[in-house]
Length: 148
Ligand SMILES: [Zn+2]
Image (cartoon, rainbow, N blue to C red; front, side, top):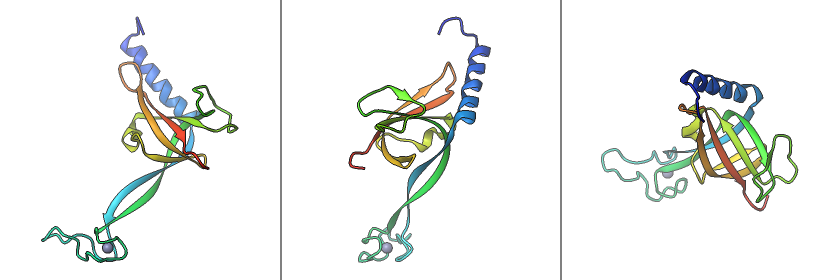
């Protein structure tokens, strides 16, 4: 954008964040994490091997995969499958969705991860950082997982 002063750019950034804060609504994001298996006690610090290779709980790996739900304020737009037109209102013909969040949530998203948005399981297909000079929002593009 031409002729945009740093002050204007900063103002646009603030405006964008305020829009997300005011128009946004909470969505749940499932975060995966690996933790030590509580049944066998995980990996032996000295040997580096799982304490119980036959542990039925973790399959002998010493790790358990856990999913933690995190609530994020986001502007969510839904569109039809194979259609990049998004509407704020529509939950009919749910296919793709676009989530706009503040930059501080960037690290929570990665391509290929699964999210639950409005009760619909979607895959993250693309992540775009948007802004003038400074990044003011993160756009996360998602596709509905087939068979729901
Ligand atoms: Zn175990």
